[in-house]
Structure formats: structure tokens, C-alpha cells
Amino acid sequence: MSHIISLRQQFKTNKMIQLTFASLQVRDLEASKAFYTNKLGFEIGDTNSQACIFKYKQGQASFAIRTPLEPLEGKKLGIGVALWFAVNENVDELKEKLIRNGITTAGPIIETPFGRAFHVEDLDGYKLTFLNTISK
Image (cartoon, rainbow, N blue to C red; front, side, top):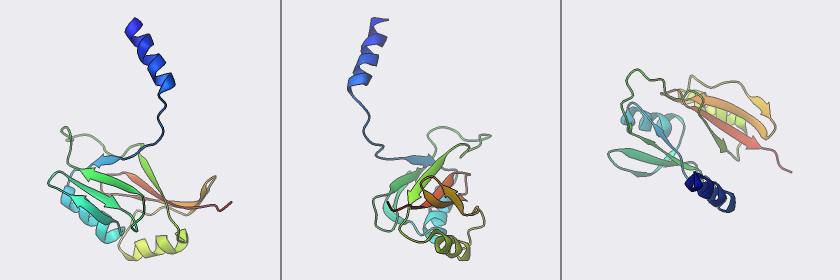
């Protein structure tokens, strides 16, 4: 029990300061790589046989798709997961551009407390939100 208390005390003094990376497990790495590059316009930052790291518009947003860490048969992916990307372009125009690129899963433009946004669902059901932030 004293070990648990010690861990709690350590977490109180060592605060998490930033999420530095995220990766999504996908069923078909090559199909997902094509979806993110050809349809959404993400740029490949690095790739290997198990993962592909993306960046968006040469900005700071990066994340990866990767081969499964465990068997995915019979499991639903993407449920409850959303990645939000702040963009410096008009979301109405971006949404139209993505639809012209073949995106069929774009949701409506919504007003959020953070700015105007819309969601796109990827091949595995993960939600990607493109957000034009409100300038203050």
C-alpha cells in the first residue's frame, strides 16, 4: 500500500505537460496510408514496415498509423477516438476540397467552443476533426 501512496505523490509533483505523439492501429497499413495521403493530403514524415508517420501541411501536427499491436479480428476500431487538427484554412473550402478528393465520410460544419470544424471518418472508423480556431 505504501508503494501506491508513493506513486500518487510522485504523480502530484511530476505533472504531464504535453501529449507528444499519437498512433492509431489500422487493419490495412497500405490502404490507410493511401487514404491519408491521397484523399486527406497528409504528408509522410517517415515510414517503415510497421508504421507510417504523418505530418500535415509541414506543420507541427504529427501522428502515426501502425500495424496492430494485438489481433484486431472481430474488434471495432475508432469507437470514441477523435484527433483534432487546427488548420489555418477555411473549413468550408477544406471540406469541399476533401469531397472532391473522394472523401465520402465528411460530416457537417459545426460550431464548437474552439471554432468552426468538421469531422471525417477514416477507413477504420477513427474521427479526424479539422478545426479553424477562433482568433482572439
